[in-house]
Length: 332
Figure 1 (cartoon, rainbow, N blue to C red):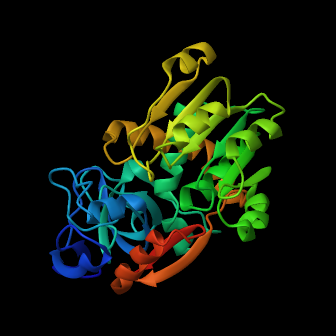
Figure 2 (figure 1 turned 45 degrees about the horizontal axis):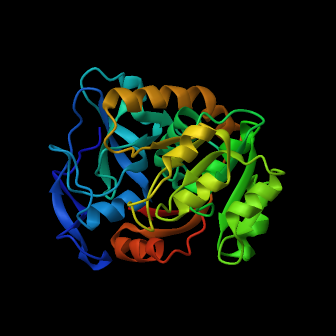
């Protein structure tokens, strides 16, 4: 049996601030509680909620480590009370409440999946946050169904590239926006039916033209601000607008009469505050509906770049540059 160290070097934010506040710090070896496993981390995904934590906007829940990181791929090296020891040695990809930017991390079994053999460590680590987020927002809140049309903003990001593939697999028509036409061919290869360059094209008018005036059934928005009103202009009767973020501001002005007359509904969510029960329920749906698509290769994350754990600062700078196509991953 491998003897585990008593402490480890992990990435924390020493104070709220820009990427330079990220630093390696010594932390105790995490111990798995009931329903948890201890993972030897092979790779950890980098996400915008990590940036929000670094900035002091989003803080870990009480009792959760200050080590950053919300998704990992790793090998089970210890099982907490109540966990089937047959998981020992298995490679899991897990959604975690924190602690991913480290060589060791505890993970709830109920929010973990056996990583498919056809995925690399980096690919497996890049998936959990996106799988939960896209499933919940696109299919549970957005209720996207076969034959409907979805408009996805931020299509080149980690969430966007995954949402394109999952929407296409569900039989939906996919319209996406991006600011770099050089990425359009690959976005179409991922499953986008129409690509809109938002700096040069009015996406509301373009979406209406593509749908022959009907409008889109679902919008996945990360921009907020003035985009919300413009999204509503592009929506069909009974459409569902889902906000994941607000890069241009959280304050919006909405004409309620428009919502009422066209029966448009507004939805929003963040994953981190969801209860253990809700995340477990989502994991069961992802296992049933999405994992077979991952195993078959029909859905696959796009990795933009990987960084050594010690270069977490560079990973955050890169993510904030707005030029990332897919996901960034840290390798301990």
